[in-house]
Amino acid sequence: MKFSKFGQKFIQPTGISQLMDDLGDALKSDKPVNMLGGGNPARIEAVNELFLETYQALGNDGSFCEDINSTATSSMANYSNPQGDAGFIDALVGFFNRHYDWNLTSENIALTNGSQNAFFYLFNLFGGAFVEEKDSEEQTIDKSILLPLAPEYIGYSDVHVEGQHFMAVLPHIDEVTHDGEEGFFKYRVDFEALENLPALKEGRIGAICCSRPTNPTGNVLTDEEMAHLAEIAKRYDVPLIIDNAYGMPFPNIIYSDVTLNWDDNTILCFSLSKIGLPGVRTGIIVAAPEVIEAVSAMNAVVNLSPTRFGASIATPLMKNDAIKDLSDNDIKPFYQQQAKTAVALLKKELGDYPLSIHKPEGAIFLWLWFKDLPISTSELYETLKEKGTLIVPSEYFFPGVDISDYKHAHECIRMSIAADEQTLVDGIAVIGEVVRGFYDKVK
Ligand SMILES: Cc1ncc(COP(=O)(O)O)c(C=O)c1O
Image 1 (cartoon, protein in one colour):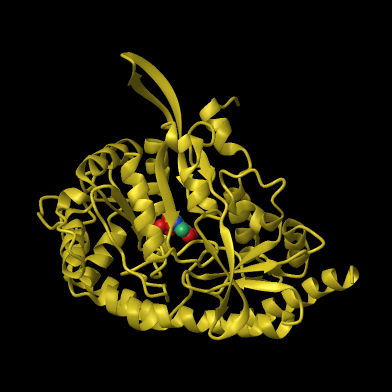
Image 2: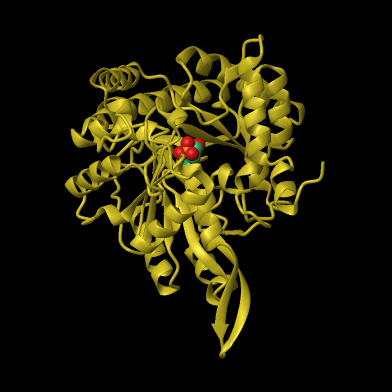
């Protein structure tokens, strides 16, 4: 069978498809696997209990599947309009306006089938071929999505329907302490390099995007960095897209003291996945009405309407703020403790070796830097996989950068901290043994 160019692009092996296949295979395998790869959220009892209770209550009161003539906005027996479940959108407007002074209306929110779906739309809306008028003539200009700080989320890499339209800026790497201990670093945006990018000055950037907290590093861009990015975005008349999958107010897996802002030039993307509902595939976009209209139009073509299942579960939890309480009191402290445990285990295994850990400021990962490791972390990944421990090597996390001469991009790994304690203990013991072995060989 012959596939179109569009089809060819998607069936090529991509970083994300290989990773998802590997993780899926590991879960099916009958051998025990220390699963420190992947982005699944942890199983947290309080979280599961609340969702189950809510789900059962919806089933019992019948609002889950009102009949076709019902005006109930949460009904799953009807499609919603392409913008998404109106009852959930109203609950979100109330929720955000209660906690922030954003003055949103329902015209500022659209739902998608997970935020991955939102990034597919947004990066194709703002990256690719643009037709613009210059000197009274129409010109086609190729525009990229600017990632102000690489490494960035693996899932962005292959979303463009044609070609790749990313440009990324490598970070400043600062050595920092964490809880009074040495052996940590923090990435900071290199604003000098960013401001001097010819593509920015020449109008070849369509949007700026960052995840905050960042997947894979657990970095949280500071308020000053965000304000500077927002100012640059306005100066060049492009939107600033903030991927808030791990951010505040839900799931609020963020330990540094920062604030979240929104204005008409900002596109904020939320998700229900990391609060513990990745299977319901619900993403939320907060943006200016013209962006919401474009996303709704894309929803109509791609999905008819987005799923209402997550919306039905989350609506009552937005209305009574239970989602915020759960995030503040259960989800955030859980991951903060997991990060502490994992850091202590890593220090025990590799404290005398050149390991540096990105300061854990949020998200569900640790980002480990093995300085001058004698092999690439893709090779390290293979060895660890043979020994039943899965992590993700750093090479995947640099969309928009040619990393062939960038050593740092071959020396890091992402490990999830969402696993249970025994898996952390076992997995980190394997990482310790293997990494010590590679360093010892060249001593
Ligand atoms: C930073 C980031 N953005 C977006 C996503 C996509 O999440 P979902 O499509 O489940 O909302 C993920 C998932 O791992 C992520 O880590």
